[in-house]
Each structure stands twice: as structure tokens, then as C-alpha cells.
Length: 359
Image 1 (tube, rainbow, N blue to C red):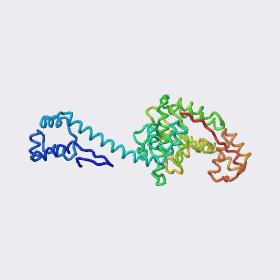
Image 2: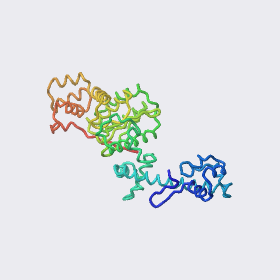
Image 3: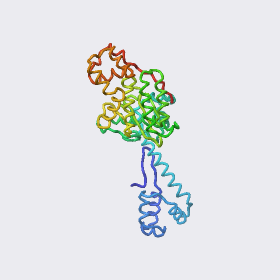
Image 4: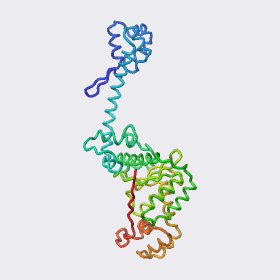
């Protein structure tokens, strides 16, 4: 390590740089100078090479030996430390700029009320960093930054990782501001049963489910989608609560309810983390099966498909018989390749939700 560091047009001189000058001018060897300073040759060597900070003890001994003040030497160390911190901050900002390029400031401005700062990238970075509650945006490059990534798939790019982590961070921050009762798994299962009764309630389902989950210690958050995150939902165990998040990208009646109950399945099985598009693996299969079976009881579904009469009227009748939104039944049939996706008559069964999201 050098006793001085250059960064752009600035140089930070370690106190050891000045001590070395004094040693050289004294005509003494470092060993002899160390003896006069009442320290070890090793300590002096580390100091002049910039590998060890100037201690108060050495500052006091230098002041006595050279006829200066202790503050003089400590100020040299403080000045050096300040410049090094500045250099590191500038380097970190360069890295943050690369992360920030993968985000869209409009997402934060339009959805969360951050100030309009056109073409002021550094100010935008500061606002986003403060909003997310992190020391640097670079932390979002880390997998498992906030929750587990269940998949190690190469399809999850660095950009996907950053955007997914940002969405989860927003949901966690929101959840931490809410004082909910302690998570109660039995109450949560009861709340899940209640949520199943609301699939046909197109207007008020969100606040009703949110309140029921809240009473069970589960904080339910729907977030505006951050484009390119490839995230469907996420769950996280907090100190006494559970955060459950889905985004508003999948608000068709079939995809929304399946995504919600998929994440509920993860909570029931005690498996917390991020769910990505097209993710595979045993944990995802278990959550998928949970969602399928709770949304449409397997025996009832088998009886229906055995009739082999799948049209607008029969799907509506079956959905009414099991008290489910018909879009859920349609989505299951399409996923099982029992009806085509391009049957436009059946598309009238799908409902697109609009959820008012407030922060």
C-alpha cells in the first residue's frame, strides 16, 4: 500500500508520507528513529508505508519529538481519511450509476411521489437511495439481498435481480411501517378461506383481503410493476409478521388469484422468497399445486372436464357451482390445454382488476 493515493485530480497523503520525510531528513535508519520515537521498527514501517493509521499514542510521541501539537498530526490523519472517503464515495457513485441505468426514475416519481428531477441523475439517485433506505443502490446487485432467490436460473439476469430486489425492498419498507398483530398461522388459514369467497367481488376484494390478512399478521401489498423485474410475487418473514407481495402486472382474474394463492402456498409451507416467471423446482411445484387445488377442488374439476362440454355457458355454470370467478376456471382450462387461448368468445369471462395502490 502506498503512503499516498491519487484519484482523478486529487492526492490523499497518508500521515506516514510526512513521517517518512522526517525520517529521511534525520539521517537515521528507521530502526534508530523508531527507538527515539519509543515505538517498534515494525510499527514505524507500517506507518510510513501507509498500512497503519496514525494512533493517538504515536501522534503524541511525534508532537513531543518534533515540537508540534498532537492536533497537527491527528488532523493529517483526519484529512487523509476524509479524502479516502470522498474517493470511495465517488467510485461508489459510478457503480450506482450503472445500477440506476437499469431502473426507471419515472416509476418512483409517478408511483411514490419522488420529486421531478429531469436530467439530474445524481439527484435522482440520491432520492431513490433515500426512498429505498439503503446506503448504495449497488446492494441490489446481490441475490438474496432481502429474500431468498429460490431459483439459480441463468435466465435471471443482473438486471432482473436488481429490479426484483428493488420491488421487494419497497414492499418490505411498507410492511415495516405497519403495526400488525403477530403472525398466527391458524388465523391466516381462516383468512385464506375468506379470501376464496371474494373471487367474484371485483370491486372491494383488495381492502377486504388486506384487512383479514392483517388480523392474522400477514401484511398484503400489491405493488405497481417495475418493468423487467420478471417477478410475480414475494414473501418474507419479518420479526413478528409476514410480508406478502404481488405486483399489478397480473391483474386478470385468473392470473391474479393464482399468483396470490401461489404465494399463500409458500407461506403455508414456511418457504419465503421471490417467485419469478417460469420458475421451476420442487418448492414452486408445491406452491402451484396448492393454488390449483384450493382455487378449484380437484374432484369437482375432474367431474367437470369429464363431461367434455366446455363452452361459455358451462364454464359459467361450473364457476357458479363452486363460487369462483369464471375467469379462474377459464385460466385453468387454458393452462391445461383443454380450451384454446384464442377463443375470443371465452375471453369475455376474464375480468381485469383495477386496484388503487396507496403509499
